[in-house]
Image (cartoon, rainbow, N blue to C red; front, side):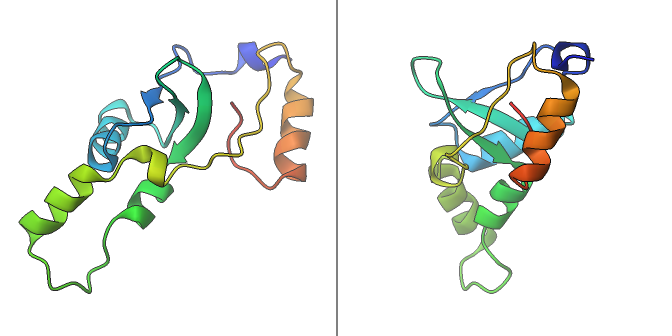
Length: 111
């Protein structure tokens, strides 16, 4: 079986300059947990997961108000929290090979 037979389509991507808050809102709307991140030329430059975005958010231990925290989060972009060393496979890659790459590299998503 090949990746193309199991992959989600269409692939929903985001650009590097989208705010963390907007990316998280889009994840929730689309019911997905990660996005491939593209640069302004449409090239893959990273991946961001829901966990990356939630970790990049503030902790409960802050003296800032909710409005101040939300304002600051709206200024932090996906590029600042995404994983940049992305290992990819093509849609013609056998599923077993992709699974082996994931296991060998301890990753949870293939692009």
